[in-house]
Length: 104
Image 1 (cartoon, rainbow, N blue to C red):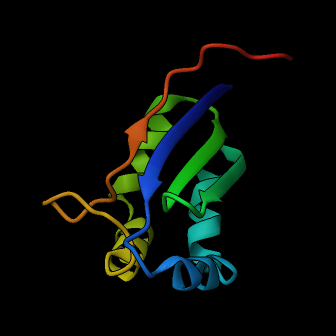
Image 2: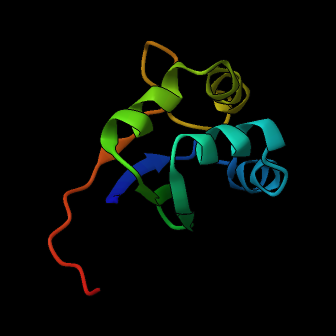
């Protein structure tokens, strides 16, 4: 099991919409995440900056990265592009974080 964490950003004025959409995450996307070995996945919102902190536990990095190639993930990314900061290739701008401490 590998822990992964990252930062993303909501576009100004879109926090409520981002939260609304995540209250109804598509079941087919959830199935893809689980099929690819993702568990204990959380996203936290820091309202003053619009930043999102994501954390997930994954079986391995290869499976985590493979999710990005699924049609379900691509469809979700297209759905979220209007409310989040994205890269020029239409992927979420997700900055990886380096773990510096872990208590098991």
